[in-house]
Image 1: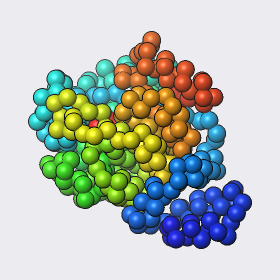
Image 2 (image 1 turned 60 degrees about the horizontal axis):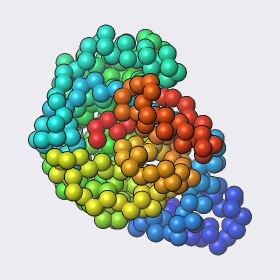
Image 3 (image 1 turned 30 degrees about the horizontal axis):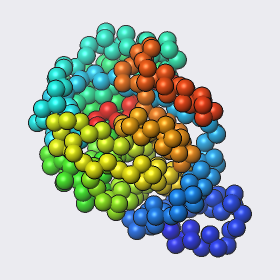
Image 4 (image 1 turned 30 degrees about the vertical axis):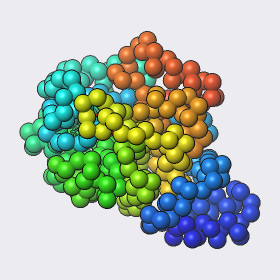
Length: 348
Ligand code: SF4
């Protein structure tokens, strides 16, 4: 079921609420073709936002925004060559490699997060694929986080099935692993792993009973069809991810993608809107690159169905001016933020 169905609904269901209930029901069971997703991306802007907002309001409380924060527990020195990433050891970006943090350090950070009202805590580590002994150490971190009564998230790179199970056994609730872009463009972004590697890890995570956080990045020089291809891949995961971070490339000097042509901000809003339509029950998260969009475009993203932001560049740093600006923006828009120290976007 896909765009053809929606077009038929356009002519038979004139009432907007009935129309969009039908769209929502269709997208629950859809396997989306890339051309169908492209047709949604190409809708007149107001029509697309109307559809996305209607789907959004059927599945989520109005004005509810999740505020997600990440702790990097192991930074830099990654052997992968993701063209957007300052943590790759291949690129000279000034990021200093750091070892995995201790249980004590992570526990203290998680405690601070909980004391500030967080209910979920994520740990990001810049590994290609953790070794079993790394998993054992992260499992201790997960248990420490769970011991504080927090939900746990992690993003650690590629996992084997038994590693995903070990993390689940330790109590891990969410795992972030992004598809980045469409399969056809993937080799232009990274060549130290394949798209199938990503899908395999996502399958292991899902099979272990861990909730999936999976999204991508736009503004990496991709063609519009690649954006449609990414969204189709995400929506066709069965089931689709519980969280979908959509990143706008942050062009970090020293990375191969530093000189990429920025995405048209209105095209970014379109990507958010189509993600909302295709995956009605997912948390659609504005992640990396949000600040560079400007406040008006962010407001359009919320209208398009984004209901989570990746916020603060350090865990719960009080007085962080960016965090204060976010709070003020949400207040001006009449949106309610609630804090979740969560993952998503760790690896980009
Ligand atoms: S995105 Fe993740 S896997 Fe890729 S280089 Fe950065 S830390 Fe490594």
